[in-house]
Image 1: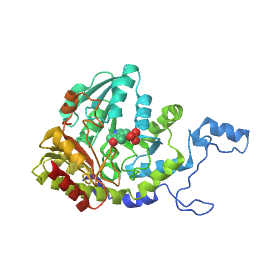
Image 2: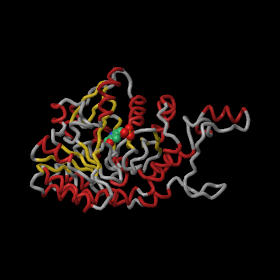
Image 3: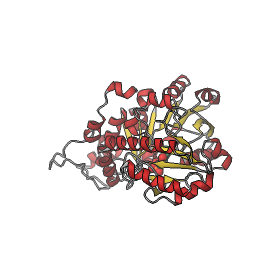
Length: 396
Ligand SMILES: *Cc1c(COP(=O)(O)O)cnc(C)c1O
């Protein structure tokens, strides 16, 4: 496991990075600078700060000290030179794509991308003449043949939503380098605790901070991490001019979430492993997809590139759609809801909920069956989660 060798002090970085006591009062918690403006000393001072955010604060859409703390903490956790925080994950993705792509460009995209990511490529970027080819990047041999003369970027998720497919991050980074392409990973399912793609040669790491980073299901956010030059280019380009800036209070909530990230992720992983093993042994369950199970198609790769296997499980019941619906309607403890990475266990049915807009054929090609159930295992006691699954499975 690559990160273990480097002995990254995730706990210390989560709690301390980016944070020193506030100099006037000694306050230890991050101050929430709930302000739009910053008063200038004089005209010359104002002119300097308006010209560039790097000369000091001017207006919160361009920069804010609470947001800066969040960015510093995330950069430290991902091992990045720089991070940039947005109001949602989708705002981060669109700021990245609209900043880096132009008419005539081509992108290689994994075929199990998040719904809004897929929409961006299929509809919004297509409208501006950017073309995308969707392939299964977990089969590394698929990638090079999809590259064209005008290809600019490879975009993928690992583990991927919702099939928990694992992609060889290092192999994709190497292909991207050889062809001078920007490599981008949506690492939301993993969080920085489980994998650090920049260490494996990836150019940009994206997170929906709404998920594990916030972790409590009460705040939305998005993060981009990468080299200073690239991230600051996005800061001056689409970040400030398209306006997907995170609010200071939300940045504070994410800072607070990050402080417990390592311990939460450890419990998510331990619970998910227990639930995955339970489900795999159950006679009414047809298949369980969890990178920590030896039956997972990329289990060996997951062991190599991840520190643990995450909190996300997808499974199929033997009775298909009907069994899935009965099972889900019988749950009493697990919460029927979208989103993930929450302290509460959340369960959803991709075919009718998050992936309703994908054609059945496309959906099944991407590994999402009619009866697939996606579970984000929370940090409650595993026994309580399993008891609920047990009684709901008995109804099927
Ligand atoms: C939720 C999610 C997103 C989008 O993030 P928002 O914060 O909802 O905008 C992107 N990618 C993945 C993998 C996600 O789970």
